Image (tube, rainbow, N blue to C red; front, side):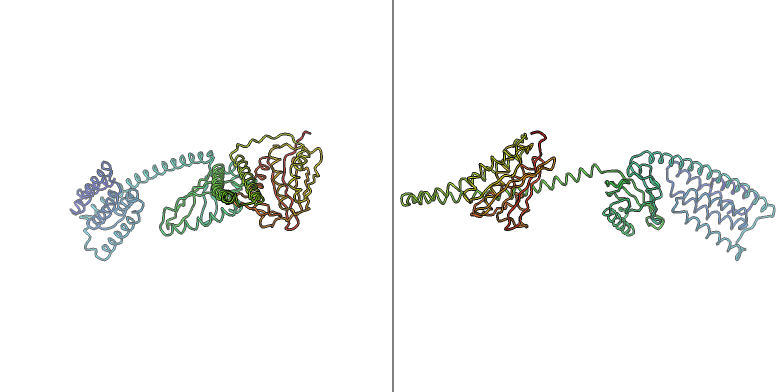
Amino acid sequence: MAMFIGLIGAISNIFLTTSLVSALVPLLLSMMAATLYYFARYRKIYKSTSFITSVVGIFGISIVWVFNGGIDGPNIMISLVFLMLGLIIVPEYTKKYIITLYIIVNIFIFLIQLYKPEYIIGYPSVFARWIDNVISLVYSAFFIYLIMLYIHKHYMLEKYRAKESEAKYKFISDNIHELIWRMNVKMNQITYISPSVYSNTGYTADEFKSLTLDELMTSESVQLLKQRIIDRFKSISMGDMSQKSNISEYEMKRKDGTVFWMETSTTFLLDEQGVPAEIIGVARNIDARKKDELQLQHYTKELNKLNTDKDKFISILAHDLKGPLSSLLVFSDLLIENLHRYDMEKIENHISIMNKTIYQTHDLLDQILLWAKSQSGKLNYEPEILNFHEISCEIISVMESLASKKSISIQSHVSDNLALHADRNMVMAVMRNLISNAIKFTNVNGKIEIYAQTESPKAIITIADNGIGIEQNSIHKLWKISENFTTPGTSNEKGTGFGLILCKEFVEKHGGSIWVESELGKGSRFKFTLPLSSEM
C-alpha cells in the first residue's frame, strides 16, 4: 500500500510539474517499499523491515511537504495513512517510538512553515495546487478506507477466534475434574472457578468464591500459602521470573468438614509495571497419593526404629549372655584348679551357682527364641475356646512351688464359666510371666490375686500383688525392647527383661492391650485384655 501511495504521488507531481524533489522522493519511497516488501514476504525478515519502512516513510512525507507547498489538509491525510500503516505492521513495543517520531516531524514542519516560509517550495500555479489536493484527498481517503476495511476484517476474525477459543477452553474447564481458578490479586478475590469445584469440595462456585482462606484450608496450609506468596512477590520484584510459576501442596477443607490434599500449580500474570496482577491456578486432588506418601514415611520411620532397636537389642543380648557365661567360666576354672583341695560342701556350692546361672541363661534364650519366632511370624497363632478359670488354676499349681519359697499366696477370683477365644500356649506364657514377676517383686508373706471382668467383646484380666511397686517414670520402659529394663527382686532375684515384652507381643496378637497400674511401696496391678468367646 505504501508503494502505491508513493507511485501515485510521484506520477501526480511529475504531471503537475512541481519540484523535482517532490517527484523523486515518492518514487524512491515506492522503490524502498517494494524492496522491503520483498524481504518481508519472501525472506521472512519482518520486524526490522516494518520499523524501517515506517520511519523512512514518515521522514519521506516530511521532505515532500517542504518541497511541495507545505502542510495542508490532504498532505496531513497522507501522513496519517503512513502513521496508520506503521501502527498496524510494527511490533507492539515500537509503536510508541513511531507515534513520537510522527509528532516531532509534524511540529518541525509546522515551525518551518510558520517561521521560515521561504524554505517551502510552492506550486507553479493555483490550478496545480488544486489538482494535487484533489488527487491527494481522493487516494488518501481511498487508502484510509482500505486500511479501515483491513482492520475491521482482522478485528472480526480475531473476535471470532477469541470466541471460539473461549468456548473451547470453557468446555474443557467445565468438564475437567481438576479445579481451575483465577484470582485478582489487587481485589484479593476469586474471579473464576470451574464447576469441578463441587465434585472436589462440595461447594458451588458462588459458595466457594464467598469463603475465606481460613474456611477453605487448614490453618497450617493458610500460613504456608501466605508465606509462599510473600516470598514469590519479593523474588519477582527483584527480577527473579522463575517464581512466576510454582507447584505446591495444601490441605483443603470440604463442605462436610473432611480434609484432603490438593496439588496446586499457580502462575502469576504481571501488569505493565511487572507487578503480579492475577493468579491463574490448576488444582487436583492428590489425597490418595499423599496418604500413600505419609504411610511410606511412617513405614520408613518404623523400619528405622526397628533397625535401631535391633542394634540395641543385639548389644544388650551380647552383654546379658556374656555375664552368665563369664560367671560359668570363672566357677568352672576354680573347680578344675581346686577340685582336690575343695571340700564337698564348697564344690556343691559352686555347682549350685553354676546350675542357677545355666537355668537363667536357658530361660533368657528361651524367651529370646519365643520373641524371635513371634517377630518373624513363625510362632503359630491357634485360638480356641478356653475356660479361663481352668487356665488360672493350672497356672497357680505350676507357680505355687516358686511362691512357697517366699511364703506368698496366690488366689484366683475368676468365675467358673469365663470363656475366652485365645491361643492356649500364649495365654499360659502371659500368665506365667506376670505371676513370676509378681512373685519376684513381692515380699515374704505377700499376696497375689487373679481377677477377670467382662466388657463385651473382651475380658479384662488383672494380676495384682502387694509388692514393692514400680516408679512412675519407669513404667514406660517395661514394654520397650531397647530399654532392657530389669531390676532385682525382693530376694535379689534376677530377671531377663524379656518377659513383659513377650506378654505385650502375645496380647497384641489377640488384638488386645496390656498396661500396669502401680504405686511405689503399694504393689502393682498388671492388666490385659483378651477376646471373649460366645460359646461355653
